Length: 283
Ligand code: NAD
Image 1 (cartoon, rainbow, N blue to C red):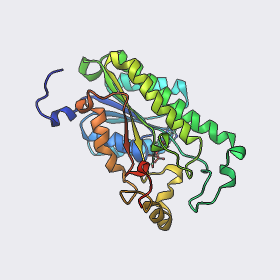
Image 2 (image 1 turned 180 degrees about the horizontal axis):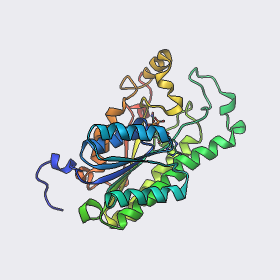
Image 3 (image 1 turned 90 degrees about the vertical axis):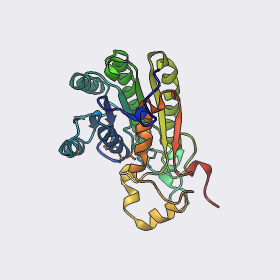
Image 4 (image 1 turned 120 degrees about the vertical axis):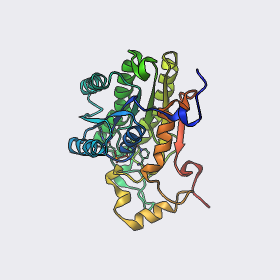
C-alpha cells in the first residue's frame, strides 16, 4: 500500500459509494450523513418508505449525492434488487453498513427491577423471537452477502477492488442486559461472529468486515422510549459510566474510520462504543 499524503488523507472517501440499511432513522441515518458529508454517493434504504424518501430528499437539498430505496432486509429478493440498483446507479459498491435492526418486546426484567411476566422464556411470544432473528441476524446476512457479491465483482474504490462492510451489532451481543428483549442477545452475538467469519473469508479480496457494538444511543429503537419520559431517561443515564446516553452524532467519527482506508489493517474487529456500560454500573 502506498504511503498516504497525510493521516487525514486516509479518511478520504469522496467519490466512493455506500449503501446503508435502516437509514431513515437513528444510527443508520447518522451513517448515511457521514458518508454524504465526506463526499461519497449514498443509497439510503429502509423499510419505512416515507422516512427514507424524506431523509434522502433533505440530504439532496443540502447538496449531497444520495438516492433512496425501500428495503425490508428480511426480503432476500428485494435485497438483491436494491443492491443491483445501487451498483447500476453508482458504478459499484465500496462501503456497506448492515445496520437495520429492532429491539421489540420485553426484557425479563423491567426498568423497575421487577420480573416481567411476558418476558420470561417459558411464556415468550414466538413471533418476537422469529422477527428478531429474521431482521437482526438473517437481515444482516442478506445485506452482507450482497455487499460481498458487488465488491468482489470489482469496480469498487475506482477500480482498485476491495471494500468495507460494517455491521451494527450491539453491546448486548457481548454482555447480558435483562431489560433488553432476550432474542436480541443471540441475534446480535450471531452478527458479531458472522462478521468474524466473513472477515476471514473475504480478506483475500481486500473486503474488510467489522462490527460496531453500540451501547445506548438516543434513537427510535424500542419505540423511542428514551425520548418520551425524562424521569426514566434520567434514571437510565445514571447507570452509564460516562453519565448519559449518546446522541447519534457521536457515532459519526467511528463510522468514517471504518468506512475509509483509515482502518485499512482492521478486519473482523468489534468496536464497542457504549459509554462504558459493558464495564458495569458506576459505584
Ligand atoms: P431506529 O429505530 O432509530 O432505526 C432503525 C431503522 O431500521 C428504522 O428506520 C427502521 O424503520 C429500520 N428498520 C426496521 N426494520 C427494518 C427492516 N426489516 N428492514 C429495513 N429497515 C428496517 O434504531 P437505531 O437505534 O438507530 O438502530 C440501528 C441499529 O443499531 C440496529 O441494528 C440496533 O439494533 C442497533 N443498536 C442500537 C442501539 C441504541 O441504543 N440505539 C444500541 C445497540 C445497537
